[in-house]
Length: 68
Image 1 (tube, rainbow, N blue to C red):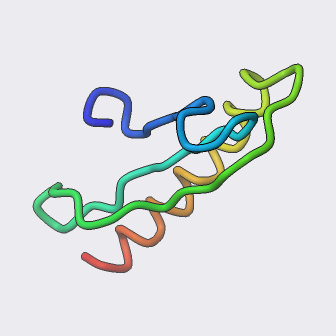
Image 2 (cartoon, rainbow, N blue to C red):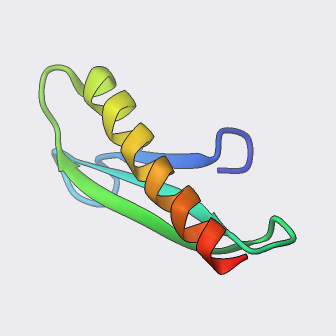
């Protein structure tokens, strides 16, 4: 999470489900929560993850900004 700013799970939580989470940050940069989603696995997971990660990251950044 700290290295990339997000975490991905590809089936540990539930078979054929991808979990994606992005941290919510307080004013000091500390993690105070997460925004995440669960997605069904398909044949093009990498492309889908890139698109969804960008959207979830944007939402997390907006929420973090509102909390500052």
